[in-house]
Length: 100
Length: 166
View: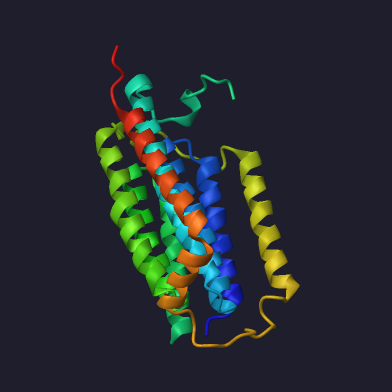
């Protein structure tokens, strides 16, 4: 049986890599893909703990996370297509209309 | 056997994730992310969650990545290939990341709660029947809310992506 801390360390590694992609990359497409990686590392943690405690709720929450991720990606890529049609840029630094 | 496979797939997923973040071309990033999702679904199989592994492949690799690649084809990424990417260009974010990673690793590895205690209920794992019963009896309201959210996202994506009548 796989020790629990292996899964947690794997989740931490993938989370840190994904957070690095979100914070360091300036390409909006790569930022969205790194966001997928973040949600996936959380799923690994859910399923590892559910497996460890023989509890089905971990898998159920992972199913919900996957569904919400699908919705998020559809809306985000719709926004991206509208943005490219209006401004024709993929750099996150060029989209500062709200002065955030 | 299972532990060796777990190490193999875990290392492969970390390597593909690094390729995802470091690749300059967004198409290479998308392919690396697809490979990473496949490794993670193999890890789900090793964690005795075969349903989640299949859902992972169907939804992530089958739907989400195809959506990403369609958008990459619609959008001109040649300019993005040319622009430089320096990992050290944003120093505060880098420091924040290193702090986050070390903090989580220290908390996990030094607490001892995750490595010493044996699993309390051994059992024979989670069956598909138990999973379905729990999902549709105990978590029926979140399930319905999720379906409404998916419908709203569907309508929102169509509205956002269509041409404005001007």
